[in-house]
Image (cartoon, rainbow, N blue to C red; front, side):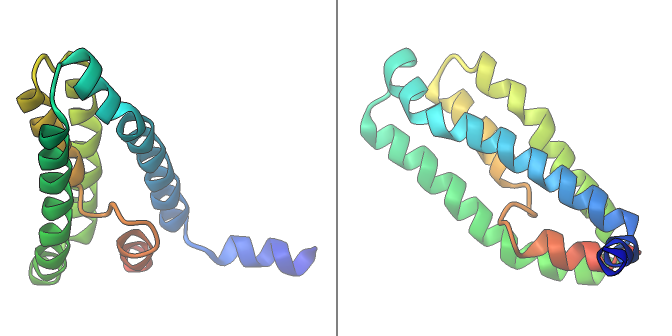
Length: 133
C-alpha cells in the first residue's frame, strides 16, 4: 500500500490535470460524434454521402494536423500553450453542434473539434504531459 501511494505521488500534478482534461474532452466528443450521423440524416436532412464527406474531412484534418503539430510544438517549444489552445478550441466549438442548422455548420464544428491535436488517446497527451513538469 505504501509503495502504491508513493507511486501516485511521484507523478507530476500537470500529468494528472492533462490526463483528466483529455478524458473529459474525449468523453464529450464521443457523446456528440456517436449521434452526429443520426442528427445529420434525420434532423438536417443530409444524405449518406454528405455524412461521409464530413467524417472524411474530420479524419483527414486530424491526420494532417498530427504531422504538423509535432513539428510546430518542437519549433515553438511552447507545448503547454499549444495544448491549452487545442483543448480550448475543442471545448468552444462543442456548442456549434447544437446550433447547426445545416450540414455546413456541422462540418465547421467537426473541423474545429478534430483540429484539436491531442485527440488520439495514448499518443500526444501522454508524451506532451511528460514535458510539462
